[in-house]
Amino acid sequence: MASDKVIITCAITGSIHTPSMSPHLPVTAQEIAESALGAAEAGAAIVHLHARNPEDGRPDQSPEAFEPFLRVIKQSSNVVVNLTTGGSPYMPVEERIRPASVWKPEVASLNMGSMNFGLFPMLKRFKEFKHDWEPAMLEGSHDLVFRNSFKDIRYALETLNETNTRYEFECYDTSHLHNLHYFYQEGLVKAPLFIQTVFGLLGGIGPSPEEVLHMKRTADRLFGDDYRWSVLGAGRSQMPIAAIGAAMGGNVRVGLEDSLWLGKGQFAKTNADQVLQVRKIIEGLGLSVATPDEAREILQLKGGDQVAF
Image (tube, rainbow, N blue to C red; front, side):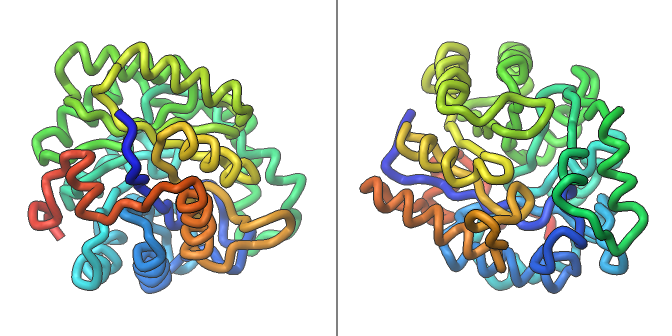
């Protein structure tokens, strides 16, 4: 079901990029909170959150690492909070879902299938690193399978369904849509499904317009009116994919988790910069940006008063 209200999700820091890649990547709890609030003020209805070790920037899925910025965001904004269960592809599912299990957000991300996860091409662009773990993590992705088995997905759903959290279903290829359809038929997920189709990451589907259309057609065939569609383009494909998706009636995701850039050779200094840029695209198409409460209505979320932070 298309709407003239476009939900902007902003992914604030992620686990793919490392602190050495951009001086603007939020690392500390204070930086993550400030960046999330800036994105919300710029027009993001949803902020998608990871945590990092403040000393070296490593991904950190301990619930305690999320608490400082969760409470600041909740006290300062009406924005919808979406917590990662992706964490890092090097983590087991039990570790990855723990923050969402503890804090019971309105939305949690959920990867819908295993895949090769190729981060090593970034070694060609970035040569100098502050911490030993950064190049080792990228190099290790030559032999990395991001595990999201049916057992893992079922475990995440059975754990988090008890919290009435809804999901941002991250689908990196058409097979992931079919995996989601299986769980939908099993009754483990409920409409409206919020499907985030991801384009341009090595190991997943590419970023061409034809591939965007293919994913949309597949989702239409599998789910009909029972889903809400969003698009995410990795790296330099971020804004072109957002433009295609918005023009086709979808929602969009931007943020420094997905791309460090605002334009060719130009770092985005804040997440808000990317939100403002995609907002220009959306409004230029004659569409309007959804508020957090409008996003809650569109996605049928439980409300900010039902979270545990």
